[in-house]
Length: 321
Image (tube, rainbow, N blue to C red; front, side, top):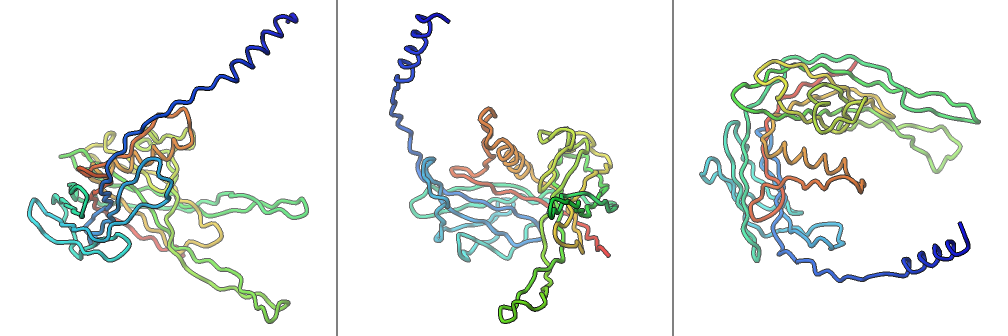
């Protein structure tokens, strides 16, 4: 590079680096709207959370809860119950929805536009057969003075068979819970050099699921050679519509404890709940990727935001010796 070329290069850097254009953008301010979130199913009382939307540049971490709303539930167009506020924006009714029925919620609050949403409780697809076997899997190592010893955990591999209903498109979610027995040390401050005692406790956790099954790996959530992993498995009946199918998946081990019980749940989702969970997972998967496409989370609240959706479920409990 000649001297003149070098001078021109640095001059261009200075000129371009000093060019800055400030543009003031007036973002449209959307009116505050009601936000309603709730999943309904035949095994639980109806519960929704009601809050207010916030401006996109609002830095507040939480949403403003609505504590004076009127929420009414309709079954097939007929008013069935009113929901009562029980605190922290939660509204509930002891009524339990019925399979095969259509439900609509209407919400009113002072100073805000009324909102409503509808969904259905779809017919339950039952688990016909569930088999499980344990597998020992390395999950890290413990090192001391440069020497490392691998540590292992026990995971459980499942095969779940069910039969899809032929008369409609079906949407599914598999979730699993584990009951874990664990312990933590209890130190005696009055006797710091004394023996350490351990207190045993039991807790129920949402299990982590891993699957390379075709119905999962053929979806938008294919993570490559390892298949999908997450807190639930979402899939449709596109591959097995109207037929029996056996799904293969694995649950995580109990890190730091022992699994004493496993629950596997097959949820048959309304299209509203499936679309909400699908778009939510895609958004979470793309988070932090500047080159990914923006994925708006599905919303079925008319004149507002949120999700009101129904599902039914069948579950199997496995006790671990």
